[in-house]
Length: 400
Image (cartoon, rainbow, N blue to C red; front, top):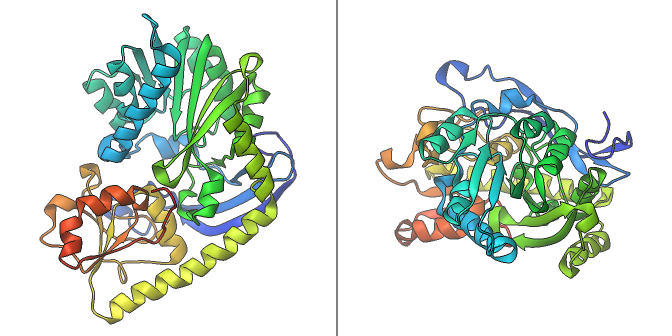
């Protein structure tokens, strides 16, 4: 294998989460016990510092029937609205003609915010369900994988190109980046929203490692990739979304003037060694200890006769359940708001998914897999908490 960013062959094992099924392959009844499994191991490039998976599940397997929907949670919708308003106000509020391209646009939640600000919008989304939902709402979405060829076929440029939670998914990483440069207007801004690997490690949020996430960026390593293709970061900020994400702004490299806060992020990463092997080796030791602590908690619940439900059925929850070795003997079901997961079962753990509106009553304990929406969850379920239902967070991020 060569590094996905810089083509180096100096890749060193860093975190091993074992052999796991593809985490977003929620199972139909006939599939239970027959799901394929793949290595889930993180390696570190000793030349550019990028951490990445050493195995690729084909994108056609992972994204053609994707059932994740961005608009399910109010927190994420509000976040997308805030990002769109900030970008527009900072760069393009006085423009009468402006266009926005969203790569991996899902159900159009981010597109909608830019449309409402007067942008001509276009989404590119490979999954059928979310792209169909977006188009049904009038949020123009091309069902395709974005890459250099797609960009050439579009034959136009955009003032804003957005990639929310998708830039670390990319099997065709360099083709996509070249396509972005080709579609970015001379005065354009590329907005990259990504899980911040430094914060993932600080939160011990290893569940954010799964097969869809091929790469795990820090600010320095993302800039290394962009500069290879004539783009560069010029600003970045830390957002609390998903337990700590970076909202980075990039443009054509010759026009990029790095801000003080961008330079501060890179300096802090260098100071703590966030792009070095010891940083990840310590992370691996901590999550192994967390596995023992979480299993002990659930076994104590079982011994006390308490019913435990999982709250949420996020993709990352399957990484956690499978690494921890948790099954239906410890968690009765996963409670989900997304109706498209009705009747499905979590891969690997084989815990059934149940739709929240169809429950007859609460459990004694909610084991919160959707921990990245902690504030929203605690507010939504305040009445259950008052009744004595315990909400246990296996990950407690600094910023959720």
